[in-house]
Amino acid sequence: MKRIEIYIGLSIFALSAKSQVKESRPNVIYIIMDDLGYGDIGCYGSEKIETPNIDRLCKDGISFTQHYTGSPVSAPARCVLMTGMHSGHAQIRANDEMAYRGAIMNYDSMYVHPSLEGQYPLKANTMTIGRMMQQAGYVTGCYGKWGLGAPGSEGTPNKQGFDSFYGYNCQRQAHSYYPAFLYKDEDRVYLNNKVLDPHTARLDPGTDPRDEASYAKFSQKEYANDLIFDELISFVGQNKKKPFFLMWTTPLPHVSLQAPEKWVKHYVEKFGDEAPYTGKAGYMPCRYPHATYAAMISYFDEQIGRLIEKLKADHLYDNTIIMFTSDNGPTFNGGSDSPWFDSGGPFKSEYGWGKCFVHEGGIRIPAIVTWPGKIKPSTQSDHICGFQDVMPTLADIVKVDCPPTDGISFLPTLLGKTGQQKEHAYLYWEYPDPVIGLKAIRMGKWKGIIDNIRKGNSTMKLYDLEKDLREEHDVAGEYPEIVRKLTKLMEESHTEPENPKFRF
Image (cartoon, rainbow, N blue to C red):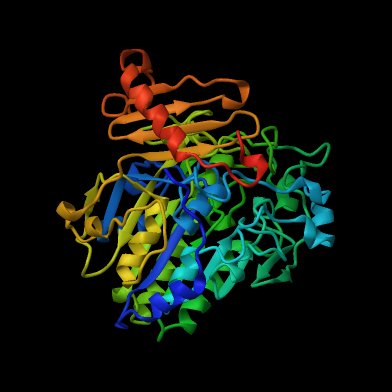
């Protein structure tokens, strides 16, 4: 495959967008959770976590059983979503904090020096999904977590197609839900919270780990997600008369485990007492880890319900598309307990099978779309698609030319016109983890994985997903011709990234 340029001349595309016939277009809200597992919500099988509002979206629209993220970790997954280029062509293919800047892991230093926070940036003038929607005549907003360009870089939201932004610029700052600051557009907004390093904060010596009072310092005055939601609702209210594109990129339920007391108490009553998490697996301690993880998801579900109420009150709901998903599979650290929740659903939930890995549990994610009057309620689709497909789908919906991507519009599937739906020949992923290094490819029922690449491995494992959804039986030895074909497709799908940290 020839390399496809990730960004194009904006003047040409702008003329194309302006030439489109203007008509009443739907608002679009894209909701992406962080580290939410396939089995963490009720409509996808959770028996422990209550998500009535997300379940209602599922009932009102279409749910996908074979939707994939662009990468098993946050920043590269979002890059695929934003640009429509899969991880073999994407600018950003791993999390990169750019250590050459200095004390990037020191939260006190980041507080004093904004130049130390944030991640490797998207290039200037990248054709992002936000920029495409802007040029289609939409007001654009992003609320939540960014991670695609440090403050002052060319990769900040306002320079990548979003008229407004509020939330965390830096992914590492999002590891605490009581941060010392957030960002409103390009400016820091300081909060009434103290700087607290979520990776080193521990219980005070001599405190009782079963005493709730021992955890008081980890809950401060301003909970970031409340503030983000307020700004998001304000954005909706200010743009009642204009078509808007809203990306709600919440950090929930990514650890640290921190949630409003109301929801924590609800799940303590439901689950009963439990052993505290004292920080041994990283991130902040938590008195009730199971209850708090569930609380984070139900709290966000409650906010989704409030957003829907707002849309209905302002007579916007019937003309609004809502897309809901996650950025990758469930995590394994910080007191989270994916096996206990069965977060992987039909896939394995243990470490090595979720986040940071390219097994199904790490990259197959829930995906729900509602569009009143257009999408038939309570439908389910097994169409194989991914983040790279969102941009061409939205281009079809708003009737503009889509810039070059690796995606295929799934609008026919949304509208029930399955006979018109084009299919991917295959899907490809690469994740240049600094220790392991992983690649995966799916072609029909076949799934090929090469792991431990940085340790010298080049042998592919092969799984038949129709017979082995949990990827427990490597059948590479039985189908050498399939292995050869998938290996060749992997090679063709990879282009050399500019950032040497992403090469392997």
